Length: 264
Image (tube, rainbow, N blue to C red; front, side, top):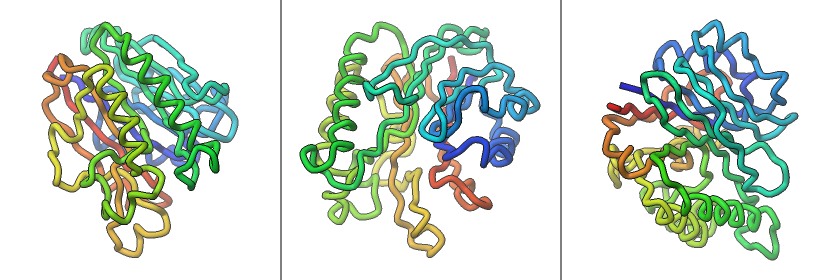
């Protein structure tokens, strides 16, 4: 068995204790982090070393974005793609080297949020998000080996992936144009959405709640974080969960971790 987790941590240095707690309680073999918000030389390697995650690949930048993959299983950096086409640290891929998951490719991605206005002309950030997805789609179209892609996609694709489908149709993250663009990415490789393979719609399966509403006990969640697998790899997934209690920890990230277990 091999377990892989993904989590938009919203500053790894600020939430190092929470990461340690998560690793202790959930014990994934591999953890992919997004929005680490630090350059590589400032990544808290000692925290992960002490927790037994002695293999790490970090693609960071000062203050913003950044991704890191930490593991108890040997790995090597496999790829870095600039799908934003502007030098931002939003992706890193690794290949597992140990007996568990030998040769498995895990792509860790942080797709841009896209700003507030769902219009390319009025909001350059929205256009950048769509272009990012188009570049990812061209990449996925050429994939020729089993791959797992995980991370903060910043899109809730299904009507059941948000607390109010009709109310959010014009809100960035759930617009028909974003969903259509993400669907083209899914089709380019035949990706299987593991979150919905194991927790089918309409079951509640959210990963993000705004800081403004979660503590008012308004359950206004969205499923923005995803774990997608090549068809042959998806067939080997055995379980998937979202760890919602992490959203209730002190000074939490606004995202919660996802964990998938594979029988490889």
